[in-house]
Image 1: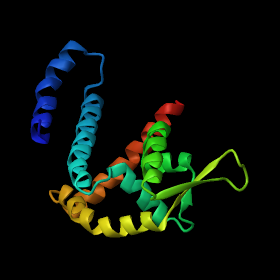
Image 2: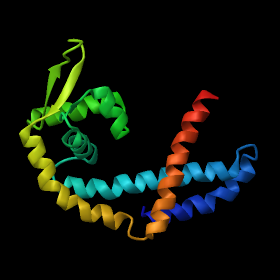
Image 3: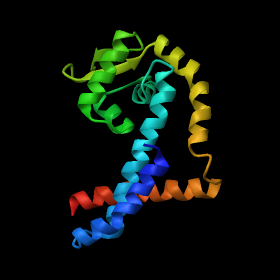
Image 4: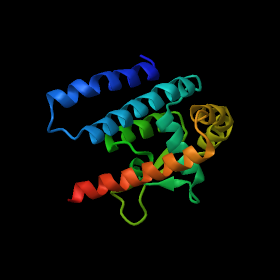
Length: 170
């Protein structure tokens, strides 16, 4: 199903959903559904881009974050937070990247029970090689938005993230 079809599905089903479940806040429910459809669309779009490069989007993001960090290393927990994935998935990503010699794990210097993930020169080379290949698809993904619309969307998404954090503590 294409994005426009998923969008129509949300629009088509919103009225009946509101009627069947009147206690459900309609505007917020539509927002949740639109965010989920957007997230699915992003994953669907980028999975093809990264699949052609032999890596997943999350693995690329992990390598890019490590490459951009001054020390070229970070803890798996911190990487999970930075990338927005669960720790179990992060463990799988790290294992795959380690198997391909793109990262290595070392015991923490302060606490030997903790691990640090360190990007290798092969990992840095991979990021450098594929970044130009993903730049155009990233731009294309948002080409339907003006510069002001992108800024507004960024601002609203940031507010949404904070709102979700605040809702958890309420």
